[in-house]
Length: 415
Image (cartoon, rainbow, N blue to C red; front, side, top):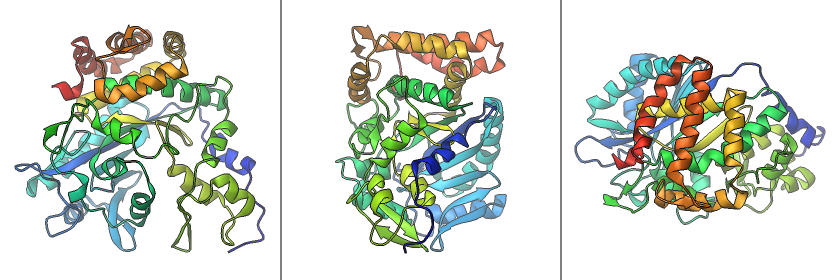
């Protein structure tokens, strides 16, 4: 209940983001996959003797992972700085400790996958690298027993929010920033790039056993999840600051807070700014409340103590590494950033916003401001390739798969 502590302020919250400034340039990865029956393609439930929970228990014993629990229910595994967690529809998310190179990330993934995939294979379960469950839809997918997910499912009001939560799988990339100016420059550029990268890696056209007509049904689901907490968290303002981002988060309606393990429902009745100013039913805002609330904000690009780029369908591993190479080439070379900014400056906020709505259906097969998207993505790849070449970065090899695919005007889902 109400305490005598000093009231939470924006200056307190700012410390979270200034604490993310670092001299290192690491790359982080979160990688979701879909557990399906190898023979029927049906989704594998969390529940039952042959469900995802039991399979994870076996894997934990084999590879010495610790349980992550929610009221004594297993919701994931942890080993040192790496985690395997479950999304609402039993999607398997592998989160790897940030590394300085793509090759180091690949090595870690290969080590974990060798045992993880073998364990699931014993149960005739495939971990599918795809952006949406190809056969089972959300009406036949039970939420895993995690309190947060039940509250989110009851609150999110978009017509495809259940699809987003229970059916989709994506890839998220984390990049570092040196200071506030560097952070906001990268944040703005990542947002500008997002619909083009979404199109380039579109891989979720088959859903419910049929061709949906959308190259990325996953991206469509995010467009129809909750417009108050999804989309762009910037209008590409060059003078944007940490405080501007915080103010955007403060304006988002709250879903819940937690006190002593008890979930206090708010259900959108106030936003976080109101909570700081007036509290809620005797509870005052804390920095932990802000951390929770900011993690229930789902923009295309999210600012944490790193920059989290969230807009990619799950794809085959070779394309995941190519995605990392694009971001490394652009964001960890000042010349790469400048070239990308100059190229994208021709497109206004409204141009890119309009394309964000077209990308799920059309991907590369449309224009923006008279320019073919396939030409935009080719130029983005050219800049990333030249940037890696200029630094004599051997990890340019990871670009080869997407360069070949994009040269044919194809996305992973097309093949």
